Length: 304
Image (cartoon, rainbow, N blue to C red; front, side, top):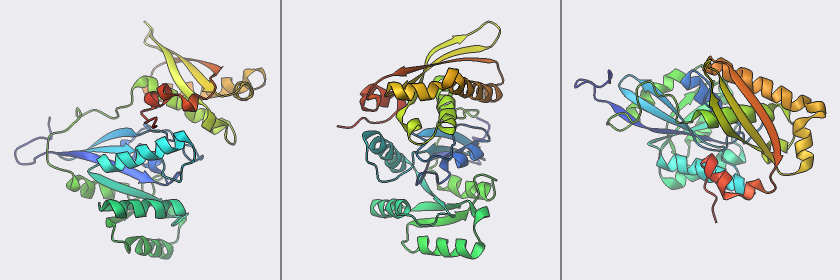
């Protein structure tokens, strides 16, 4: 490892990105990684499980954990997602709370700050979307959030444009414990290609379908074929809960599913720099959100 020398001992640790739904955690993760590792949509609760992104900063290896949004859950899957987020925070060496500066202190933000306060662990505060808020409002928001004594440092950033993002890195690296790196120097994420491909399709479904339907489906890469010409053929199944949902995902004459497949394929080809053959099928699997196997595949705890 080139960065490991006697003069500069290595550091390594986990940095959890936590926040309310749509605070910009996945956008920040992608900005930090310099490429897409987390899907991003305007809809809340897009991220369902913890996603790891690895970044080298000098002699330090920063392992960022993009967690699901923290909110007041009602359903089993929502409870599992929130539990995964808090678990990611508990296991991390450093916690970064991302707050949408445009929305300010919502009930979800209050709930998260209170949870951090009860844990007794100091966190770093990142006020996001600063390009959309006046400076005096930002300073007032930072002052209010700082009163609980939870935050050791406050940064003002725009995950979308990158403003202020790199300013956080030296301080975050310094907070990590000394020790060997956990991943190879060129490692980017722990998400395997099958899951990543499924996430790209799910992202397009979120973007193209309305209202609650995207939350009632899941995507699995069932078959994977590496072809001799260097391309890859992927067979994916989109599981929905009712026949009426299947009809909506397919669209009249299959127009919706074709659009989703074309967009996901183009995204994958651009990221992987190889040809992708993507075949999508829609199946009804009633109550898949109550199936322990689906939770295991997503890295979530099914619970009791």
